[in-house]
Length: 123
Image (cartoon, rainbow, N blue to C red; front, side, top):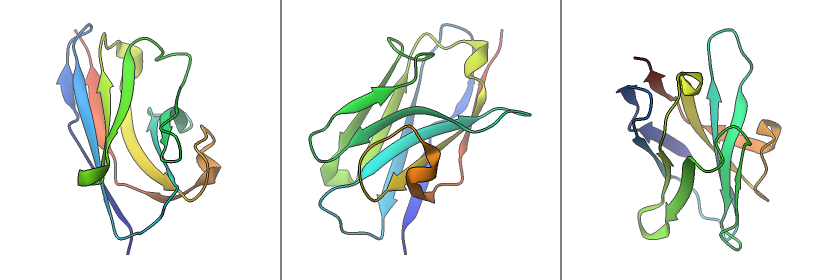
C-alpha cells in the first residue's frame, strides 16, 4: 500500500526556517507528482508547492515564492520542503500527497495523502 509520512514540523519564530520531509513508499511509477499542501484552522486546504518526476519541474504558491524550496532525493524516495523566512501566516498542518500524473497545485489531482505535520510560526 502507498504510504506517505511527513516529518520536520515544529514551532518557530517569524523569520525562522524548517525543513519538512515526505517519505514515500509502496508504489512503483515512472512519473508522478508530489505536492505539499497546508490547512490552517477554519480554512480550506491549499497548495503550497509541488514537483514532477518527469522533468523535475517545480511550482509554488505565490504566497511562498522566494521563501520555500521543494526538492527530491529519488534514491531515498523522499521529497523535501525547505521553508525559510517563515511568517505567522504559514502556520498550518502541512501534508504531502502523491499524484499519479502531472504536478499540479490542485489538490483534487492527488490520490494519496500523508497524515500531516504541524508548523507553527509565532513570536
